[in-house]
Amino acid sequence: MIVRIMGEGQWQLADSHFPELNKLDDELLAEMDSGDEEGFRRVLGALLDSVRRLGAPLADDALEPSELILPSPDASLEEVREMLGDEGLIPG
Image (cartoon, rainbow, N blue to C red):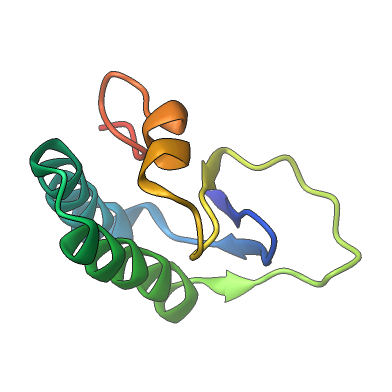
């Protein structure tokens, strides 16, 4: 799956990594529901770091369709709230 981090680029991730990402997505939703800005920042950073660590970056000039788009590391809680679907940032 191709994952885009807004403002950074794209990474190719194997489906086998999505249980770990979904766990972080669930934690992010919990932090957002509680309104904990510090917790939100920590978990968003961990989610994006996991994508960078587990994925293979695509070349900057590659224009592949992204199957999943994640917010930039400096996105606000409200900006991320607007991006959420029924299942969080990561479906499944």
